[in-house]
Structure formats: C-alpha cells, structure tokens
Image 1 (tube, helix red, strand yellow):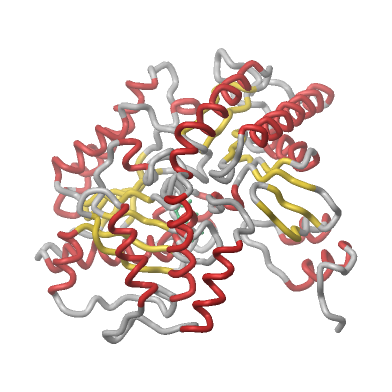
Image 2 (cartoon, rainbow, N blue to C red):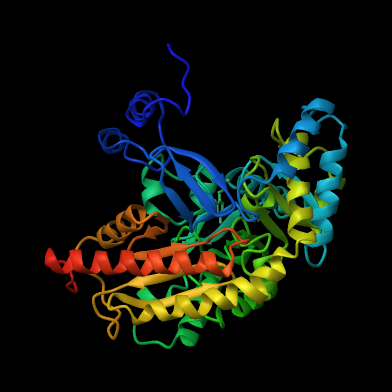
Length: 464
Ligand SMILES: *Cc1c(COP(=O)(O)O)cnc(C)c1O
C-alpha cells in the first residue's frame, strides 16, 4: 500500500477511513456514503481541513483544547519527557516526577481539602474509578450496603460501562445496557421541562427529587450523588441559581458523598479554575480530564478529599488502577498546560475579556426569529431553537432534526457549532479573542438565517 499522508486526495482518505475506521457516536454506513471531513492542521482557534477550509472551532475539539491548538511548548515537553522517561507505571510502590508534580499542582489549584489525585486515561475511566472508590469507602466505614449512586437524566459521564451507566442518556443505555446500582433523577432543564414554574422554583423542585430518591431508597443504601456543575453533552444546561445550593444542603443533611464531574467545567471553562467554585459546590470528589491537558495528551483523574483518601489509604490495597495512570508524558504535558493557563492569565482572560464580550453578542442571538433562550457561563454556551419563543414550543419534526440542519449550515459556513437535540452549543478555546468572537458570531447569524429560510421553505418552521 502507498504511504497514507495528507497529500492523498480527500476522496481516497475518506474511502480508507470508511473501510477501516469505526467512529465514535456515528452511524458508520451513513458516514461512509457521505465521507468524513478530514482535519489536517490547527493553530489557536482555527482548524484546516483537507479541502482548504479554514474553520473556526467553536467547540475546542470536544470541549478540551482550552489553551488553543499548536502550542510548541507542549510538543517540546512531550519530546523531552519521552527521551528522559517515556513510560513507567505507578503501581507496586513506584512513582516518577511528572506524576508527583502534576498531583501536587492539581492539589494546589483544587479548592478545600481536595488534596489527592488518582490518575486515569480519560474522563470515563475516572468516573469508573469514582464508582469503585465511593463503594470501597463505605465498605471500609462498615456500611457495605451503601452502594447506590444517584445521577441525573440527560447527564453525561462518559461511555464506558460505568460512565455510560452514570450518565442519564437512554440512547447510550440502549447499546449494551447498564451496570447495577445506579438510579437517575430529573435534570434542571427549565427551558424544556420547567412548564409554568419559575426557573427558581423549578431548580428547587428538581433538586428536591434527590431528597425524595434518598428517602425512597433508604439513606443506608445510598453512596453518592454525581452531577456536572453545568451539563455539557446534555446541551449546556445551566441550572437555575437555586439548584446547586439545595443539592448541597441535601447531600450534607444525609451525609452522602458529592461527586462533581468537572471534566468540561474544570480548568477555566466557567471563568474559575473549577465549576464548583462558580456554583458554590463543595464536592468530596471531582472528575477531571479534557482541559487538564487541553487535549494534547489523553489524561484524566479523580481529585479526592482528605477523608476518603486517608480512609481508603489506611485500609490496605485499593484493587484498582490503569496501566497508564499518571503516564509520565501525559502528566508532563498536563503540567505544562496548567503552567500556561496560569502564567498567561487565561482564566482572567475568560472572566474579564472573552466572556463579557461574547455574552452581549450571544444574548443578542435571542433576537433571531428561531432562537428562544441563550445561556452562557464563562465560555460555555447554548441557544434553544424554537418555532415559538413565548410558549417555548418544540418543533413538529423529530427532536434533533432542526438542530442537525442548523449544524450542517454551520459546517458549510466554516463554523464548528454542535447541536444537542434542537439546542446549539459552543465551548471555544479559552484563548479566543474579541475579533475571533466577531467571526464566530457572524457565522452563527448567517447559519441561523440559512437554517431558518430552509425550514420555512420546507414547511418545517412549525410547532409540535
Ligand atoms: C467528556 C466527558 C466525560 C468522558 O470523558 P472521556 O475522556 O471522553 O472518557 C465525562 N464527563 C463529562 C462531564 C464529560 O463531558
């Protein structure tokens, strides 16, 4: 076979891709017929594809490229680390400097007594760790029947068996089933489920489902609650202000462990180091991944509080771990990423420059005839598409059809904006500048206009 390089014609690359590469969360046959978009290079917030398009990445890859693409410092750190110590494990009473340095740095950045890090290769793996860790903790505490973890419908916690079960997405549960001992309560999505309630009342109402569920199951059977400070993959669902304080109150009252899945909201996305700080949440465990390395290396982990780490540590071996837990190259790259976030004041840039600049323009999208609500926390935003803003109506077409059409227009206009159902979402690299935000917004308006015109022409701009 000829060597496969970016110099091959796009159609050839697409044919090889279709023949041999199974894509995540993708209808393989449909993609094979259409041909995948081939991304070739990236720098800052800009992607290049094999057909010469210059695309603005409104999603930071998959919510992960916080410092932007193509930073030479990270490449250099990786090369140096590979030469010095390309791999060693952290099992069997050994360690190495990159894992030590990264764990110490994360402990310094994390709030409260979240002082211990268990490394994984991804967010899904870290959530699998969390399931075992909280159950192990209660075992040691002499309460082995405390095993159930309460999560939320339309939450996302990864797609391994554990992560996929914690998540509340029926589409994932349908493909392979769920593990036992996980139950779901409602999500705080006021726009689509709040009915006639005020957002504040609805936030309390949804949080109190946690208390009802704990009572129903018996607190002696409940280990933990897990939630994302802001649901990401579920459509950037920003909970009403009343929600998290009530969840915190209930977790405190019943003494159940609180896990904040910060895989997206960690490392600056919401304008603080962690989303828990933005929402005043005091978790016992945080799940991290994505922005930890800005996607330059696959790495995730669990940041664990003193009480759990000390309890589990004193009780003998914790029979869990990954070959690549604390991988030296990934750890060294993550550490350099954190240095850049800190030294270049990127979180301050989000808070003081990029968020305020984008917020005004994002809110203005609600003047578009098909945009209902617009939400933006830090650099994580969503807009709800609707045929009727007053009634918050859904479209008559199957949910997601309109969102997909809108995403197609965005792609055609060289903007990466994703859809979740009929919500459009963004989470650009945190380094995005005001002029780049102007480009993003201009392309978003154009795409919405084209989508709107297309729907009207096809008789699809109608409520259910
Ligand atoms: C992406 C994501 C995960 C899963 O992380 P992977 O690295 O894809 O395994 C878990 N939780 C949340 C909140 C995520 O957004």
